[in-house]
View: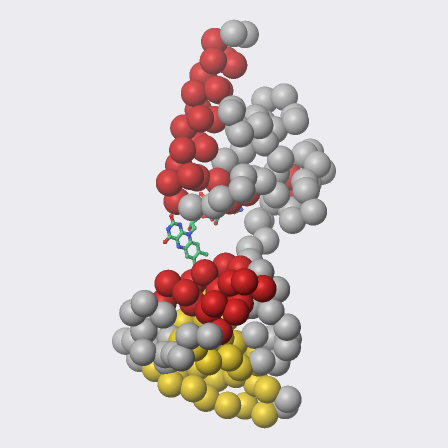
Amino acid sequence: MAVIGGGNAAFETAAQLLSYAKSVTFLIRSDKFRADEVTVQKVLSHPNMKVIKNAIPKEIKGGKFVSSLIYEQMGQENEIPVTGIFVEIGLIPTTNFIKNLISLNKYGQIPVDPKTQRTKVDGVWAAGDSTDGLYHQNNIAAGDAIKALEDIYLYLRAR
Ligand SMILES: Cc1cc2nc3c(=O)[nH]c(=O)nc-3n(C[C@H](O)[C@H](O)[C@H](O)COP(=O)(O)OP(=O)(O)OC[C@H]3O[C@@H](n4cnc5c(N)ncnc54)[C@H](O)[C@@H]3O)c2cc1C
């Protein structure tokens, strides 16, 4: 398995994969990890864990399934055999279209009231990965949307 990234999410993924995989290789584009030191130490001390620093992923090869990953390191292309690749490099929400209406946070997320999913703009709600919620998962996005709908219903009834 290969994990691309060097932050906490990448380390959490690697920690989970190490329970099942014969080998897990980190590909990190710099030479420094951004994860918490305690997590870094724990994961990297596992005998099945490998690290490739200063590596830029270039291509994923395979047919029906993934078979290898090509990366560039100091101007040279290398290939490693892998059967799975987990990309943990963070996300930028596609909220550009609304930035002139709602003030976004530094990650481009829409700040919301977590009780109602209301934004600071009257009559606009937001849900899921576009918001500044702490966790982003499928069920959370769906739950956010239901909260927003409940609140929209009350909002409209009160008018
Ligand atoms: C690699 C990966 C693995 C994941 N694994 C899991 C997992 O195992 N379990 C889990 O619960 N969650 C997982 N997640 C997180 C989960 O996918 C998200 O939290 C969830 O999809 C968020 O739903 P959403 O509706 O907010 O956003 P999205 O699913 O991103 O949907 C947003 C939609 O809006 C559309 N859109 C964007 N801009 C516009 C526009 N201007 N106009 C109209 N439409 C627009 C997009 O095309 C997209 O279809 C994973 C995410 C990733 C990236």
